[in-house]
Image (cartoon, rainbow, N blue to C red; front, top):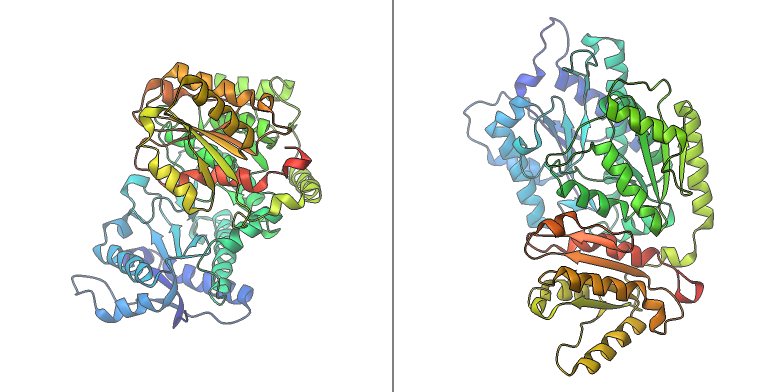
Length: 503
């Protein structure tokens, strides 16, 4: 689809007012900086547009709807004034509406909406279309007062330098999307999945505010080198949703990077440990599936927080550090070089089977183990797997005990992957099925299965909320079923080796 404009900037006009006479407003400066940087990266002058008219009680014009229909990308500058502006919300909603109507709200697997955060806003106050998007933070946190300071030259040289770094990050990502608009196959995720399978995918853990610049620097270099960096969407701040989200993201990755400093960090609601500690722990559990961890301790990290003192002491002493985890207590640039070396090594050792597309005609056979009481509830999951081209086998529920057991063992022997659906089944039932999976080679198989998973659903219980295991991928969904929940399972199948080569 051809567009008359490349970028539409949506903003509250009060955010463009400048308290210093003779100075350009923040929006005007931002607009000019991004447009110039996009032009330099694109190699051609882009078409940017924003409404210079003061927005009051005017009627939302049809001409503006036409503008939103004919623009490739929407940049929304988030601030309290934006959230309170009915006009800004209409611009967002109209953009989403016309793009959905044309079937092109996303390009590849990326949204056409760019969230530029001028002033931080609680997630729950953001429009629904914005809540899951990662933002470009054009502010910094004062370490002494904890107050937010917008990236503006009037606040000093440091704020100005960081402003241009953020502009550069935003421009690079915008150019990627603009380049894709000219490709006929941009509407699906095929190209993105192919790119993810040719280079190791990297999980870059969230960190505390004092290490945000270091995290941005690591992420910037990884993305410039062509690596996919996760998380690729905003994470929930409520447990256990946070843990489930992190596990799904980690399941897609080959390497996890963690930056540790002197602060303990934010604790998700309902959890007892910080985001950084939880993500590091969850990544450690994924090592059983081949994930490698690289942990960097910021030089000079000393703290009076007892929790962080213990974390730093254990990392430095090697306690709990496994063979798939390396800890670096070195300057950041040395750590980034070590990361690049590790990724290059992993790229060279990947096998052709790891880049096999899930769209291959030779689909795997999946044995979906469930209790008899879950036959109806498991239907959406079965349909989703079939719709993706997989062969799905369910347990035999009718017949005598011997027939049922023999059928179960035969399915275990023949399947390429197995998934336990834990809904109405009891805890002893789940433990029996887990033991069956752990003994799967003893069922006459010459090799290990490509993927093992436990899908937890149905009524939410304490056991289900707390359940974890190193022996299988765990997915939890207590609400409406979404095929997106299966992404980690599909990814394990995609990156697994041929049976003849071992697991």
